Image 1 (cartoon, rainbow, N blue to C red):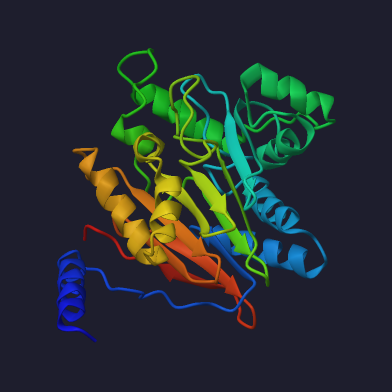
Image 2: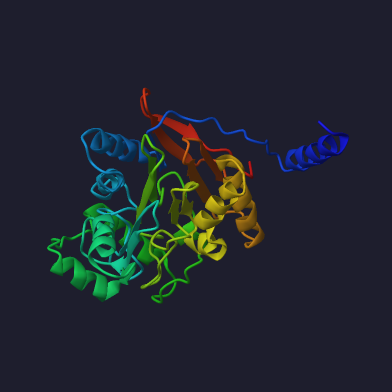
Length: 328
């Protein structure tokens, strides 16, 4: 190797070392691969894997995986049992995307258990990508989705306790720490990414958003490029945590483009966290990213410790992993 090339590589490695990164550090998993955010991601990847093995498509798999979490009342920030907004009403957001660029999303949707399925129907049955509010509700009814009460007694009690603690009846601003901090009991979005045996990709996200948010607030999860982005040429990424911060950096799209430029998934996720932190002065608001490259390499990174994600690959059982974090 020529001396000039050695110097160039040495400088590049040194810069990465200063950032705490390594070149090409990602290990490739055996395809198919499914990854999903947080502890509840275990049931999501199990169902996605089972659906794919039984002959379902990639879209079938990611939709089925997210639906399991949406139907679990013990997950307090997704679907049934999700925390309501400041007025006591549960509103849901979701998106779904395949690696060809086809995608669908819904936001500010009330009364339907599976917003991810409504999002998929938007993609498949309309010329549009994104339906919100009353329009999304009308479309869901036209498509035969059944209306249900999403506010469980447990979530309602938590909302009533929260109301009692407020000094004013006015809704709080959307960036209040108590409505956006992600802690042990408030694990936010379910994001699921999957690659099949050929490297084709799909992903889905679903959430009830920040607990006790302002009426009408929508976070990053249903926004293609922010909460979710999938590209068969490169890979896929999804986000969790403070949605406003993720939107401001188009987090998931950023990660996919960094992978396109040669960064491995972990490095790409870390760079997104660094950029997010540069846009906010509050280090108490968690944000985390999960990425899957088309060859099966995965990566994750968070601002604060505690972000977990589930992994399922060919020939191995589901395992839960802890992501590295920028701050300790």
